[in-house]
Amino acid sequence: MTQTANHTPATETLPEELIRSIESWERPVIIAHVPPDADALGAMFAVARGFGSTGATASVALPEASLSQRLAFLHEWAEPRIAGVEEFAQADGFVVVDTAKKPRCNLPGGLPEEWNAGRRIVNIDHHASNTRFGDINWVVGDASSSCELVFHLLEVWARPVDELSASLLYAGIHTDTAGFSLPNTSGSALAAAAQLVERGARVTELGERLCRSQRLSEFRLLRIIYANTRLTPDERIAYSTADYREITDAGCAAADIDDQVSIPRSLLGTRLALLLTEGVRGKTRINFRGDAGVSVLALAKSFGGGGHDAAAGAILEGPIPEVLAQVLPQAERYLDDLG
View (tube, rainbow, N blue to C red):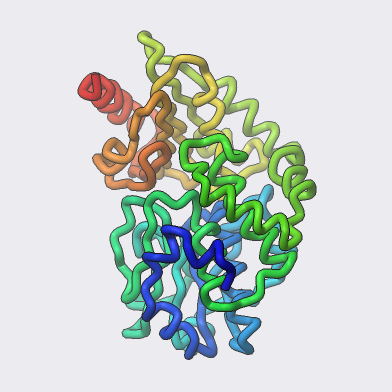
């Protein structure tokens, strides 16, 4: 355990029983949210590698088609064992990372409704809206990312963080802070990132892969988001849309919807940005982003969603025009109430 890891606010809240519990597991399954972003993937793969260094056989829940084109390289790097129904049946415990609600777990098909069947769930997350659904919960709402927490977990657990694990964890911190540019870029996040660089994190390659390696399909999708971006009359809210046909015609899928909300968010002077996408026909996913000190968490919760103060989301039944007609007026009232 390093001196830095021992004295972070995050590790001071790490439940002692968490380490005691996972140390005895021989066939754990590691789970993240759907669709998994870089923070979810990095945390999930790094936890699995931590178990692997103990001799345990860890597997990760990553159903087919849930991995985006942009982040497929993280899977290629980690080469994890994928959990199917058999691995879930044989598991002696589950670690769920970066997932605010149990129904958001990214699970393979064919599992029973009570898939943990009395076995313990360790819940590690940085979402302020986390419902504490685990038997053991380590939720740090002001942490930059779940990868930051997992780095400290591996340090306290005395598991090695080699070049590959450092790269996976750095990817999560980098993306969840938008390249260390968002308010969640704390001193502890920067310190963790610095230590990961010292451990060999592939900073240059990650920058190229995450920021400068768009496939043509992803580029087509960005053109759609730009073309569909609109402002409300008072210019406080910027929003954009992409329906099922537009997403699939671009050569993309639901898993490829991630940080495109940054496009409407980039407009000068807006306080709230929305991205409405229909990655699954008949279901509209809403990404909320707040700027100028605007918290969007309460707004997302009003639609059954959750997340962070400045970044949250929700999923509603119905096509985009119907959902937009419901969400936009409520978002305007929300800003009015904030003053």
